[in-house]
Length: 224
Image 1: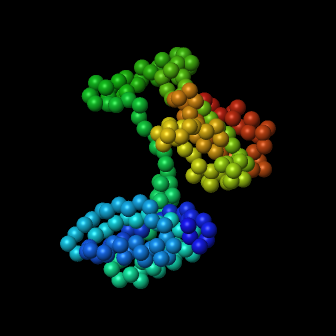
Image 2: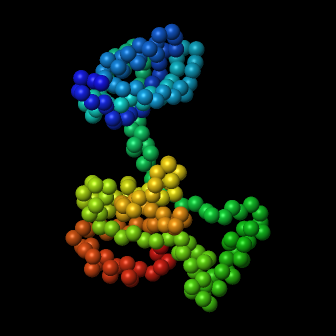
Image 3: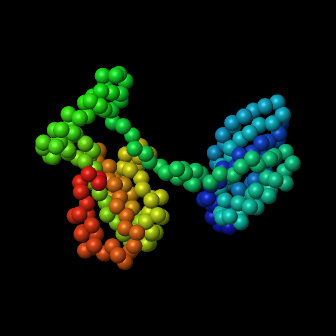
């Protein structure tokens, strides 16, 4: 326990080039510890005759503490900071979800089934009976969640752009060993397979229940 009476909880990953020799890594860790940095994960990415490169995760209290740890490492002559990464922002970079295919295409025949000319038969069938769209498109596997951002993960009101960072599908949550949440700040999965798609209202004032109802009743099913 530090003199603050608590444990630092903000993680940063230091990529450090350090002298490769007896005691050099221990001295680096001592420098970090003297600055009250809490070391957790250590990943060695390179080992050479004269130096090594490691990604060292260090927990700090705040930005000021981060700067203090950075100075402590810089003052140790045997080490050089190559870069500092925030693992939270690294996990969110580029978004956390993507759309993927449900069918693999390995042969020319399969390509003809899922694309032209096979797909034309499906289009024709749906034209003749629109109810078949639920069987042969992703409409039947999706639901929509309408939100004006008044409550997202207890963060109080969030604008539409801010809410985008909170979107996580239920499949991903289960992959992480977590149960899907019904909080509309998250994407949930219904019946184990139906991904929910958020419809975010940019204005809190202009998205009261009557306006929300009017909006989603006008959206065609194919929007989901």
